[in-house]
Image (tube, rainbow, N blue to C red; front, side):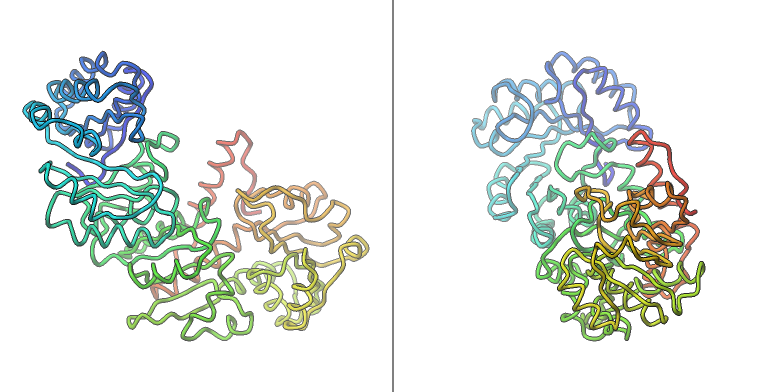
Length: 510
């Protein structure tokens, strides 16, 4: 068996076999979700032929009932018949949920095991992560070859609960432990290091059999799961939302290119206490901090670089060997340098949209360069406070159309993938020599499109994104960042998303 078992689905036997034939080119450990088929028994002869033809495949048969989170609508007896015949057809392992095992007579379970396949007894909690030891205690007396416990992460800390459980119990059984859900990513990538015998992956994106399941290729190529070991350092991007962040693709590419034994994860949370638990317990070696935590995290840092202290916001955290946290701000340079390559900032009149963490970096950085900075924010009081702190000015929305700017910088999340669409400015208000949108996903934001339609030069958020990430990489590793490779993978990923949405890819680095 490998470390990653790829779940194969299909509404018909032909579809299931087609997906299995595709998956087996890269993975020989497969789980066939027989409960996805209308008539799983009828499919077994063809599946037996597939297993005969692919002798290197290790196959799990799963036929989970609706009542335990699957799709099989039959009775317990019907489920057992499917699993028994799957074992006879050449499947090497059969997955039986705990609730079914507890309702069976010993003779029935003995009959299933007599068919020769190894037994996995599994338990799925689609609501929470709790009482993992109690569940283990219920499964252990059945003496299955494998124990599988799957919970749902409602917080990042739930992953810590799962991994501590794996560390405690892995010596007592062949154990598989996973947290489902968006926040369960950590357990899916790091669970093997904690003691899980293997983990599960989707055949491709869109074919997930559980919430938060990761595509097999992503696990292999982005997270390099086969190379993760006890010495692997863990980094991540934290905040909300980070589901669509390309930081993991960019940073994991950089780690691979520079042969750094590290992995970088998306850590979705709005609660700093949740994040601090993760930093301490995993432990994390470094963080990219995004909204809404850039300012809140400051009071938990031992020390910061001068620009973070001045801005009052930090986007980069390093955890020292003694566990203390140190902060840096790479946003400021990543905003200033693209603008400086195109204009002199001393005396330039620049409109900054927003007053959050990244806006603070823009305002303070530009003011330090001698620019005249005007802030427009949905909440005027926040803008006024920032203006006082940075020696900048505020501007009322109705004044924007009457004012000419050297540059307009969008430092709000408006236009970001996954954020409710809204318009910050009207075309008539784009009175500027240049428009810089710090949102990088998508490349072609509504603001960028509007600027291009008016014939204005633009800077897309990709340039800022790569710059800030490159500096983070250098702070964490002490190595020069492979900026060209980082840019290549980010632009490729963004163009793929545009193509999947059915649009022509724009020029990302104009």
